[in-house]
Image (cartoon, rainbow, N blue to C red; front, side, top):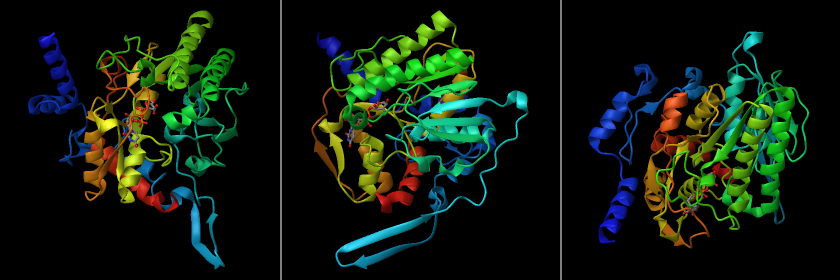
Length: 423
Ligand SMILES: O=c1ccn([C@@H]2O[C@H](COP(=O)(O)OP(=O)(O)O[C@H]3OC[C@@H](O)[C@H](O)[C@H]3O)[C@@H](O)[C@H]2O)c(=O)[nH]1
């Protein structure tokens, strides 16, 4: 018993500490990155990776993507903001105008152009995926009910001949002609998906049935955005795709994690019974620009709190762990998976694991070293540890994360600085 405890403690410690210097150097050497793709901007905070200047898919410049969400033009706000005082009332107005020109997109030969549906395409992850697919030259249809998505996330494509935006809830059937479906629609932040649990289950279940039915009719390839939450509060660490999970089926998170589990079951049901071509990615904690500052997730909470000089809210002492990936890595992984021949579930996440307390300190150090940390109660059923095993992603689709958490945070902070006045 004593030695078992020791072993457990050792494993727990190993899980939160960075690898040894030798391991890190070996990992860096093994990365097959072209030299000109990076600048050597190693950080003093936690894990380090070379700075990324181009994303993996089609070697697109990071600066091109940044131009779509950092800076005033990202919201198309033009002219001056007028504030008029009238007694006790203050009215603020702004003028939204279209961009003078759309971002240039690749011109693809007709045989390579795909008609791609992205459900939840106006959300945080979906909108970045839409940017990539548009820039690559495809025709994109976004279906979103705007429960947690925003039109402004895809506003820069409105009116583009390759783009359609539908206000549509996936619990209702959708009739469109498509070649690929990325099915992302579902609130992902715990406070949002717990807000109306029955609706969350309907979204995952009926929404997935409807989109799989569409894939069956159109013979489109279907990719399900599943989640690390299907592993629940895991007893296996790190989590491999072969792990069946440890989920409380009647807990407050069940609407989301059981919803996604049934979505996976449906996906393989349609694959086995109706020969629908399917792909499933299990997405681990992801952050980046266009996160909703009020959605209650830890990265946006900590960054906004630090920028505003408020206390960072760590729940339950902060010894629970999470592994955070930057959104552009995730999008690279989703596109690589969709276009691969691999049909089993694939974890997409960054194995850089932090305790939430370490993570709060990292964000504090980057954003506002004067900020302080306060402890709040732990939410019910909060998973204690989470870290992806990404061996399958590396071997089957040739993907691994390239952004360090620190670079991702710095990029995200730039975005939040642009919108901080509106929060
Ligand atoms: O202000 C905060 C917010 C959150 N936390 C803690 O930080 C950890 C991460 O919380 P988040 O809400 O960001 O995300 P969770 O890991 O709980 O859930 C996420 O899992 C993976 C994805 O599918 C989803 O985006 C989301 O459900 C939790 O332990 C939470 O208790 C804080 O300590 N302070």
